[in-house]
Amino acid sequence: MNFYTMHRKHDPDTSREAAKSIVKSVTSLQSDVLFYAKDCGPSGFTDEDLNKAFMCWSSSYRSRRSELTARGLIVPSGRKKRLPSGRNAIVWIHKEYDNESAPENR
Image (tube, rainbow, N blue to C red):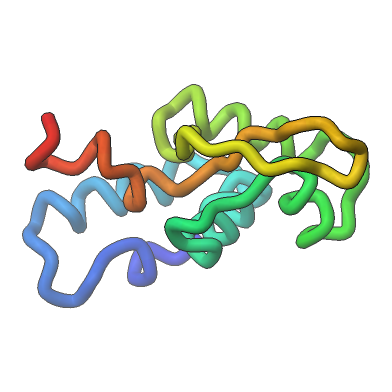
């Protein structure tokens, strides 16, 4: 994970410090999942979408998403998406796109 892609050029020092702490504490697969979540934007993704994106059908990426969810870096969007199987799946988003965690909503 690249520290410089985790914050914007004009972000305050606290954002840079937060980015540094995240970079030091995530694994390579977790980093891949975080970048994927950020790339998906506010529309989010399901675990099935995640597996398709990485062409991996084991639980490797879902487990990393779960770890990141436990840390509050990826959050449920409050929406569900119907899968081809007919089941519903949670749509996940990067915490940056979560209106509930926005400072003005705290």
